[in-house]
Image 1: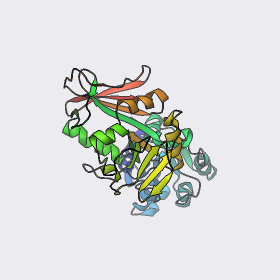
Image 2 (image 1 turned 120 degrees about the vertical axis):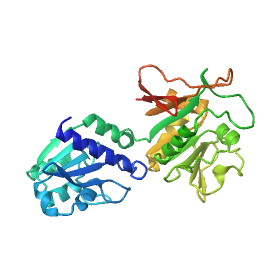
Image 3 (image 1 turned 90 degrees about the vertical axis):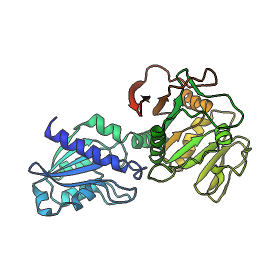
Length: 344
């Protein structure tokens, strides 16, 4: 690993601290190095607040050293006025002579403009260090801005013989997840802006869909209820968290509850994607049942899938969805369970 790669890798580590709070902005990390010594670090902590470069520069105790330093950034510094002033202008103003960038910004208002601004000011700019890793870090941001839909993560647990649950009309679901993987699910909820389930899951499981076992904001709750038949006493409708109900009957909003009408005679998944994009919801975790998950897979409206493989044998029940061949898949272990991680 080269010196530049080492510091960009540190940028990536820092950026991951902002996963829960920066969307719809990208997660970004920055490191300032003076004579092979890190003198400043920062990451984009929260949407609307200072970017990684700003926080890294603020952390430097002796700003005179900046004129002899290199700033490493996982993503191209912005060159436009948004919630905050351009980071490229700040780097130039502080006199930092060298900038090393992980990857360019796919956002149309940046898209190379930051790099050109730095180069035009006479700075030594290097681009593309650990580029693949840096692009993976901002994939949700890229999907939202390029494909004009939320970044979609599907997750479920499956028994050793391929079932998600037993066939039931009531009672508790079969618990296939381990305690540790259940905590990880709450972490995933904190890292997504919204969470979606179907009508049957809402009715049978009565979930609260909160992050109670992890630090972070609760996601917006989204449920499909075509005919608006779900009872009002469900946890989904307790008014504590913004909730969206997609249905075929009406558009109506009350406190923390929004009903949005869709055309159920057509594929509703693209309609949901468009609606969430228009509401500036950049990421969606789908925890629904087999039918809903299969709908996303068939519509090809997904970006990541996590499948937990439990040792339990159910013999019969609700069959697990199957991811078509041709997608990248990696396997890892969590709490003794094998997790399949598919990526588009």
